[in-house]
Image 1 (cartoon, rainbow, N blue to C red):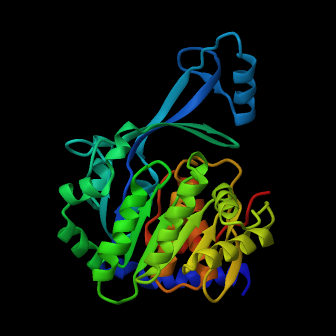
Image 2: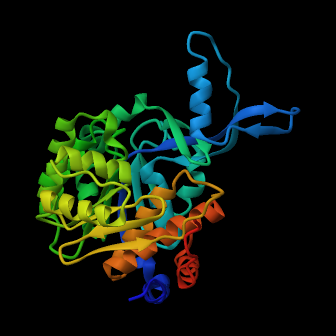
Image 3: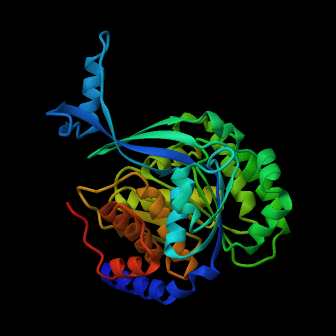
Length: 375
């Protein structure tokens, strides 16, 4: 099928499912952040007007030039919003129309007000205080500066105390999708994965159920930790269809740990890496999403799809999480692998253009005439 044919087919499936998505249940966790979206000031003309540092490279040069001296950088907070891989991903699925339970670090004792809008479309269960992130946005990427002290409280003991084991099992029993994201920043999420694999999934009824995992840039974690906890995904596969989502950097890190040749920026290499990682872990699906598109492999096929890359996004923080939400949505409504990739790239493309996630109807309309990537 051509790119347009894939898009039209995915659009039709989304449009058909849009009115019934509330019957699709999701249990999602486990992080939670308050994100401040920030410009770094280059020159200030007056108290209202400034020019921003436009690239990470330019900011890096300024920082290096300050070595042995001192420097002062002004941050302008453009927006304060819910953050974290889990909340952004879950919010996108809730906006699309799914029935969502979210468990994570949202605030203590109550969720932070930044999650109030999210709470209108999902049931929230807070385990502890939220993490804090300063997201410095540039034209060529973003720098995420995090404060993570509270996140050690995201653990199996707290989950059982705050939610309750029997209630958590019941929530998972009703779920079509279980997602546990941001392993890197949650030092004890691997413990939760292990308990889900041994104490939750085996107790659930045998039906079609997806488990989605997002590591979130594991560079700061040891190779031993990565390999050990990725092995838990293999155990989960005995009871559910396990999907692992990676950006290009994460894919290279995981491939290296697993003894697979890390992918370069070539489409074929990315698809080959997805196949290799999937086979090494013996799970259902691996999807890798660089900015310009996405490649994936499942048990029966592998594919690449060119996304609707835009050179000047209105908002880039959260684009990967919206991709993951769109991809999972495609899987839930019966899309082929190529169509799910179209849904994922379209969800991300819509988000960066509109600075917000799409409803299922909006996503179906956007995919129908999906823009070509900007060079």
